[in-house]
Amino acid sequence: MFIHNASAFLSAPLDVKALKEELKRHTDIYFRRVNKFVLLALIGAHRCARDQRIRPETAVYLATEHGNLGDTESVLFQIYRQHCLPMPYNFINTMANTASFYVAQGLNLNGRNLSVSSQNLSFERALELLKADMDLGAVQSALAGSVDEATASESRFQEKSGLAMDLVNQVDRSCWLHLKCEREGALGEVKTIRSFRGKRDGLNWLKANGREFIRPAVLSFGIAVGPEEREAWKKAVRPDGEFDYVRECGSLNATTACGVATFIGRRQAGHLIHVNKNFQDRYVILQVQCC
Image 1 (cartoon, rainbow, N blue to C red):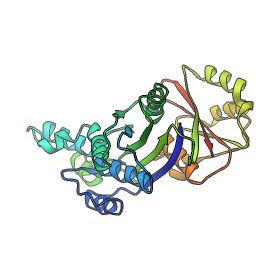
Image 2 (image 1 turned 180 degrees about the vertical axis):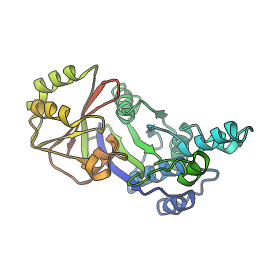
Image 3 (image 1 turned 90 degrees about the vertical axis):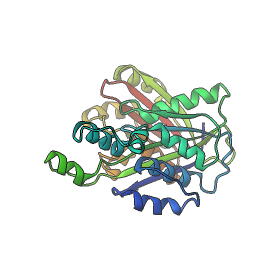
Image 4 (image 1 turned 30 degrees about the vertical axis):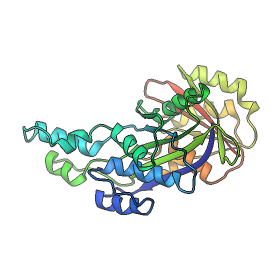
């Protein structure tokens, strides 16, 4: 899979009005009845599609860790605190897959449309599905993104719960890749994406294949991989350096999509080897090469 464009939208928590103004910078289309989660998806996807020839059959693979926090919080409050039926607008928008529908509608796409969530490995699972579809010839072009809100409204949460909430360094994020089967004009390539049942299997694979990576090769880790464990991975890969996007973005905000989009955006030479895991110690190794 070849990466033809990458976009990372990271912003301090914004309200719907501010996000609509940001979206106007990227499209003239007016979207009715959209919420914060949908707007974040639209902003990221339109930024990634900018100056690209997006085919109508392009697929959309939207990954999210937490989905639509804002409207989900509103619906739960209406049901359990106000003891009434939720507003239809709020209820419909709790479904995260409405965001991928709006992305397809805004870009006039009629290809496959999927939303994926998988406990800290959501973007990796979306890429695995996309690779399978491309290998089968079912998809030739796709937009793959990771979207999450920083949190529900701070003031409303404090008002209802009486608890203070620290939003320092939290951001709204919408990071996307435009991927095709064709190499021509590509900025990078997803060379490998492999899942492992545990650390030992992943380390054994890296020890057997690590020396075959084109140099320079930099190593990167997801937020769930701890400092001591990282040393074991470094010994297996013996990288030329480490790309610590988590430190740059903040541990509350960093996702695999953010790391890959940032790496590609900087046009760094060589390979990025990204190691991530979920909280059941299932690992995914992602290898990306800049062209």
